[in-house]
Structures are given as structure tokens and as C-alpha cells.
Length: 445
Image 1 (cartoon, rainbow, N blue to C red):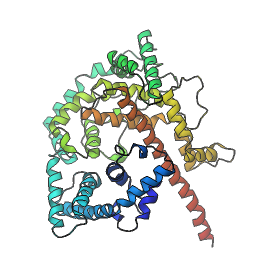
Image 2: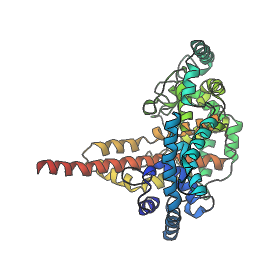
Image 3: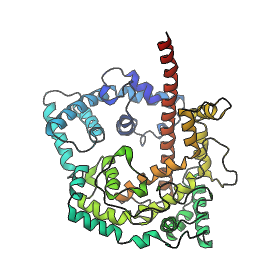
């Protein structure tokens, strides 16, 4: 809210970085304002979600001081998009690729002046070359060869028996050792929710040493019961739409709007998500190597190579099944300090409180808000899907978790992301409800 207010106060000149109503684009905040203007590493007192008066004033002042560079950034972004069209570059999202370089250009040169078009063209060419063919188009071309498709499909089918686990049917409840490891997962979450958000890492180390992430991946293929402490939830927590994750296929197309559940995605869809989300593609291996590694990853437990990331899925699952935005959840389910931190934050959300009043009270009228309230009853679904995507991206870049604090930062960050996404959807629904009566009155008049 503070950033939005300060942004709007800067006045005209920011249209290329703003939405239709004048608010900063999400990517403007994520890629420019937070890392380059606010710089939380230098101003940790401004990194919190809720700011006291002095901190809010300081944040507004930082945005105000950046007014001229931000306006110049918007002008440079327009120049780079023009150069992109002239060069015929189509790979990648322009905002992801150019927002930060444009701010750098604005800081170094100010607003575009003589020679700006040549400089913009050089930046676009440099960024396109840095991508090294690591694009969705290059991936599509690589997988278009019929012989290569056949070889990859055979490689994906080879470990099929191992993927399916126990072919005789459901494996049953957890063993004593597995129950001990499941308890350690809760201990790790208790440590995560400690006063400083880090706590001791003994439980995390034990989970790594016991390869609990790998074990859970295999239990998922065997449809083991009792894994999450709630019998009403599927073992896979909607990471797949099937009773067990299916054998991965190669695939040749993908759409952001229609991506299936994470463990149901084809090889193409898995890498499509990585390439679409990557700002620094030069950090990725070439497409052929990306594909080779993804074949093994897609057949691995939980669709991930690194054990620390698999353990993160386990801890995220235990956190997710205890999320209770509306309050009044299962009293028998053990909730840790991490649960209390996340649930407390979510239950204080004004949008959640309003949705709860309007949809669960005696006068609830259904409609869009009722659907949003229903989403709050199953928050573990969007949480787990968003978490898996985040972990998959780290796995592709070989960014393992070194300690419990780093892991908790991701688990908590995903919870905040899901909460903010739901907040935006509630606000959109409320705006639609407020507009509808006004439109009806106008038609009656």
C-alpha cells in the first residue's frame, strides 16, 4: 500500500511500468522497486510486510527520490521494446528481460538522449545473445526431431516399474521408522517458527540423513496412508490429478493458462515453466543439457534430484495441511510454531475476514466470494503447487538448501505469495460486485 501510494504520487511518466489504473505492475515492484530502490539488504527495517509510521515514511521518501530514474526507466523500456521488435526478438518476457537493465541505463545515462536507439539495440542484442538459445522456441525445435522424441520417450519409460512402486496396490500405513521421520518433520517446523525464524537444524539434518524426501516420493507412488496426519487428504496433495503420478511424456507444447498439476507435466511443460520464469538464462545449461537432466529429474522421487529440495516438499506438505485461514480447523491436527506464524498472519487479513463474513454468515449469497471462501478451505492445493514450482526452479539451477533457515525462507515466502494472490482475487471480486449494482442502476435509469 505504501509503495502504491508513493508510486501514484510521482505523477505521469510511469505508464510503461504501470497498470491501467496507475498502480505499479507486479514486476515493477518485484524487479525494480524492491531490489533496486528499497534495497532491503541495506534497509532491513523496510523489509517487513507491515511497517510502522516512521518506516512507511522512509519507504515513501525512497520511492519519491527515485522518481526521475523511474521515469527514465519507463522511457528506456519503451526504446528497448522498439529495438526488440525491429530485431525480431520474440523469446522471453520483455518485462523480465529489460526492467532491470533499463533501470541501470536510467541510473547511468538518465533519460534517453542522442544515441539512445543504438544503445537500446545493443542491450537487446546482448541479452538475446546471453540467452544462448535457451528459449522456449529452441526447446520446441530440439524436441521436434522424431528420432530424438523416440529416444527421450524410451528413456522416460525405462524406470517405469520403479516409479510405480508397489504394483499390488496401496501400501498401507507408515512403518515405525517412517512415523519417526514424520515426527521429525514437525519438529523441524517447530524450529522454523521460533522467535528468529531459524531455530536448530538437528531435525532437518536427520531428515536429510534419513533421505525422508526420497522416501516420501516413493510412498506417493505406492499411495501410502497416514503420511500427513489427515486421512481425508490424498498422499500426493494434488500435485497430480491421478491416484499415482503418471509416467512422464515428452510433449511438444505448453500454455501458462492450462499447465496441468506439477507431477502430470510433460518434459516440455516442465522446462517451459523454467524458461518462461528465467531472467538470467545464461545461468542455465544449454537446451540439450537441460533436456537430458530433466529426463532423470522427471523420473525421480517427487520430480526433484536434490534431497534437500525433496525434504522441503515434505516440510511444505506438513505445513500446508495445517493451514487454516478461516479458523476452526481440525483440532486434532498438530500445529507447530510455523503453522501459528502463517495462520496468524492469514487470519488477520482484512480480505479473508470480509470473505468469511460475506460467505459463511446467515446471509451468504454465494457467487464469486463463496468460491473464494471455498478456496480458503483447501489452501494446501495452491500452496503445494506453487512450492513445487519454486523448488523445481532451484533444482534446475542446482541451488540446494544449506540449512533450515534458507528452507524456511522459501516455505514462508510461498505462504505469503499464496496469501497475497488470494487477497488480490478477493479485491477483484469485491470490485466486480460493487460495479454490478451501479451498472444495473444505470440501465434502470
